[in-house]
Image: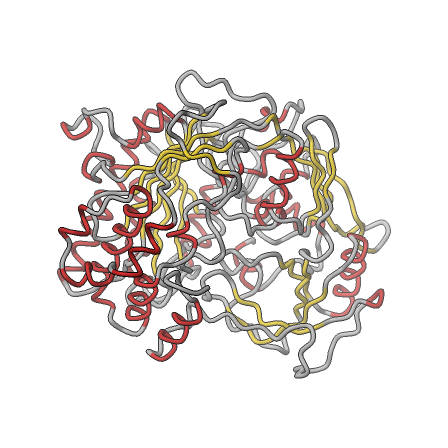
Length: 602
């Protein structure tokens, strides 16, 4: 890019010069590299291995160059599994690498590790209709491609993850979700639910070990088969090559953004005076069914987005005809880039200024309103002046958008956005308790953040994100006897049928921020203690950060060994143990696994 939109090269250079760009550097040794490290494995079927550094979304997981191959058919994956079992290797499905948790490989995996990355994005991308509203799709296809294909058939989904650069297989592995519950008076569409993408699966094809044949084979599981329940969300402990998903007629949406409701009102405790004006988060959810709050650190006004069903374009809405309609967020503005560079260079005390800058960029990009900028401190005015301000305004106003195809408003995060780390949790509660859950969390978060600030510590420089979904009801797909996704964060508890809603919480910050892990640990311990199964329950969001110690994520032995399994066991019926046993039975050699999953899934 040129002009005032971020040049990523410029940010990388500035940050690297300051010694803090590890969170953004993305290096690979490509398939045509002349510098091979080690001896290439001899793969079956003439597959040619090449080497590539694995790095995840925020750069927290980064490896030496590892061996990679790109099978051209599902059968080649089964052949690879036989080879791996006989040779002592492990296979890891590699998609778009848009995740945080070490479910594919662990940080620091060395080049001599017997692990082969299997790139599904080159060839395992076919899709076709399998019925009037059912789509057959291979797991290497991107979510963006899938929704575009469905839109061409007049079909869509109720909700989906915001990034388009996720593979279908990756989204299913962790129970990917969007934000949606039925609005007041909204009839749920036939065949679709308000939970995870995994709950829309009608059948799946996986590579499994056939004991009778003595080899790995492709096997298709219908959703009614008991064993399918372990594969619907599998965390990378299985390899799916194809699924059939239930979809439905697409529905046009209107997305309204506003930045005029203070956090003190939006997140107010139920029954308080601040909650009496009809502008709480739960109020907006009730009216529209679809809401997301993005609350930048050290600011008073969140960015609230609501989506509502809108068959025709409202008079003053701006019609969009493609996804990714927030250029100020997708393409990091130069002032944000430069201040981020100073943060990762060690000036962490700039976090309050960084939060205020992000809010101003958002408000101006959405509304064109310069009032707050004119009243801002001189440093902020200088950052957002001249060409930078002109470029920001040139993106057009984005506060009221309408899309005939739902995907144009459901997908709004590009790979070019700021790469931050994230923790993630789902609070199960009654829909009537959504505001209570939100207010409990936000009050504690704000108090904790202020306490750190008073000590001169700034572990947060990103945003809090809050969304709401329904739970995974297998009955919605219209298949009698459909099995639940045993490891889904949205699987309902049989003993708490009144818990019909999930409140999703994410905290975003730059990965190298000092004190991040300790701050997230305090948040996590509070969440487990507050939502302890009495009035509400808690589960982790698989793709994000959890199990925090003072110094690391995905490391607390109590959360890994007790809290997480208990959260998916409580309530009775098949759960954690049954899922682990099923996955082990179909992959006894643990070809599809890694040391982290070996420790977690036991």
